[in-house]
Amino acid sequence: MKIKSPTSMVPGIYLTLFFAYLFGPLIIMVITAFNSSNFPRVSPWECFTTDWFGKLVADDKLIEGLGNSLLIGFGVVVVAIPIGLAAAIMLSQVGPKLRASLYTIFIAPILVPGVVIGLSTLIFWDRVGTFFNAPYESFFYNGTFLTIFGQVTFIAAYSMLVFLSRIQRFDTTLTEAALDMGATPTQAFVKVLLPFMAPAIGSATVLAFLASLENYNTTVFTIVSSSTFTTVLSSKVRYGLDPSISAVAVIIISITLISAIIYECRNRYHSKGWGLVIAERPILKFATHPGSVAAILGLLALGAVLFIQNHDSNACTAQVLEDKRALQQKLMEHQQLDTPKQSTPAPTTPTLGPLGNDAASPAPASPFGGNAGSIFSPENLSGSSNTAPAEPSTAPSSGGGGIFAPENLTGSGSN
View (tube, rainbow, N blue to C red):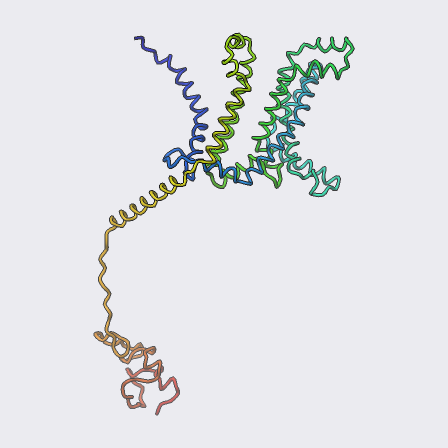
């Protein structure tokens, strides 16, 4: 058995790492969309659920943003595709020196940051609206209008590049022959050039729509108070993630895969080599037809939708929640057992004497002399005593009370 050298394994390892880096996040997002955990994660796995798709559909703000994105994408395609096609035709018909200057001008918006385009679009149309004294309810301040024209500035350049790559292979003698045979320039364009550019128009349309749908840097400034699909997703990511984001990824991946499979089946079905293979096999011809493939994938998608609607994971979710509570209670009991118990002596209640002091200890000496208690003792505050009053003395006593004695405070006493 021949042993492979380590050098020959490098390409395989590189390809493995490359595809893992490319498709790994997509696979993880697909898995997290069906985990009942409140945070998108693969481990620990809790329950298989489809509730996040229902939560996604019930999100009114996200649905509204998706509708705005589709409307903006349609508007961008309608405006950007003709501009890009016109720019490509112009560049193919001018001289080399002028072509270089025009190409630099047309391609410049791609090099400008999206933040700059968004701010400049907002400021420009605000100045135009101020010049015409337009109210704030006019289209000059409408978020959809501003976003369409803000995105068109650079998406039209993308479309122009697609058209240039196609029009460079066009034989201009075909248009000249049509003109020589009496066709008008419009007829020559519609019947000769436009059919040749049809594949590029389709590619540029898809590119323009997807670029508009996923754009954020420009849209976040031009959308004003409205929202799009990307701005809503950005706010959800900023203020808290949940697996409904993964559900969005699953839907987008599914649509992309279905479209790619149908497109590939269409191309292979119309190829000459595949036509010879299926010519003698009617079943294979029917099975590989783009319409049949689209019908099969549509039925699979419909079955997935019905399964998502009917699947109930409440019992599993409740069991997982109960297990979490039991585990938490067990951990709390274990923590209480591990905590050392500290023995504290019971507090003793002192026996109070008649003046509120401990009977076992002598009364504290007064700060003004004697042991008759302080000036705040009960007998001094009430002006009475439980014992018989002492005979008044004309001479000041060193331990009999002081100037704050009751008879001195009330102004009574015998001299």
